[in-house]
Image 1 (cartoon, rainbow, N blue to C red):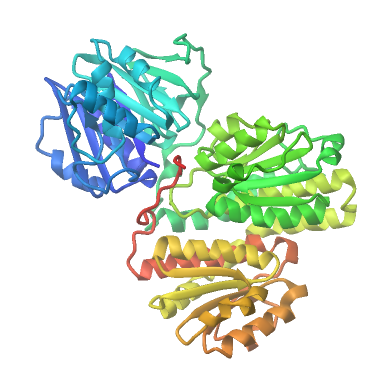
Image 2 (image 1 turned 135 degrees about the vertical axis):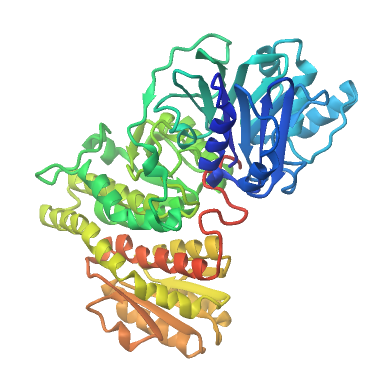
Length: 607
């Protein structure tokens, strides 16, 4: 949620911050703002897209060597000019940008009103931070921030500047992402690496409860005890082009088309020439695996849907019971966990707060924690015992695509590794699945080459307002992800359910005008799916079947998407791609803002 960026030292500080905000709009985009110091502290902010802010400041005095900026996903207060960041103290001498939530903002607000006579003008928790720092300020912005964060509860990252300290930029992290970088012109902070890639490829990954003090000639990091920290530089080996659209109209379609390459990369880093699996230094021994009595897969959103597939394949290959749980609910039900539990956390960003909180709960109870993440050095990665990186490359579109399919590949490799080591998979079956995985990139390429036919289908159904996605077995897991993709970018009311459950109530909603997407790629369940399709058609709903090329599915349903043939076990990697394309084209034909859907953000760093 939200994106913060700051720069000090560079004569182009304003441009650095605005460029960073543009790169972080995927984190939130209902308002934006910038604060600078030249002859005094100046703050400019506007509701709406970043373009509104650019228009606002085009004739303003913006020469500066220090600036902080913000792009917002609303938590407290509706999107408006007033609620946009940065926020200031009443004297307008201190400015703050903030990502996250201050949980005790009500009590802090009441204290500031009572003891300092502060007049609040916004509905945000962030304004409390600005006034609190101002209340505690005694000429040293660094010390004021230290004192403020000691009084604040929650999960947040902040950056602050003060008119009387124009040579220092202070940032602080508590359970929300923050990185710092530098070059020969100045120092920078941001919520995410892509914001600063045009400035540097050398970063410090900031840990929890650490303060970053940026000056034009360097960066100093302090721990919670106010002691300096020596931190290794993290060098980024991908460039800005990887985070650009590359001529495509949207990041989402670019990232859909990148899936064959991303899957190949994920596989090639883990498979040896003799088909053995290299877990990137993860030391899961036979003794470890046989000692696990239960596996939890915990995640949110798309990553949770990957976990649903993971449950099926781990149980099938490794014969270990697996429970998949929504991270936001996991720790509040006091789950039974001990040192015989393997906890698998899945998160694209590695900063998903609900997943991070669940991870900490599991870890505190003795579980072995293995994370599947895309962002190297992220919080989830750093707090796990073992990390399995997806190597999908930067994913910018809010609606996840290549992160999902590479998460699936990681889960397949983990399941295969465990099954082969335990002996619950024989050699022939193991090699068969490995060979199937190796063919996946080519089969997705084949699908992508025929995407115009899916575009045509999207044109036919774009004006329908009720969709259902159904399937059995692994198809049911894909149905949940397919439904999410459609609803999050097209805003169409969409619902997913296991096909066999339709008759237990939901079939009451089947009627003329409803579109039911029926996934039927599991050979051993195909006949049962055909029965479900007939039940749906009998209620006059329109059926779009998704099935293998060698099936007779074209004899059923009203519309069809035929996909390349593969073993049932690996079909989720194939069948999800046309679902991504269908959602993309429906949203495009409806004229929606695909990369920045309303009310959403890429990295969810609040509970």
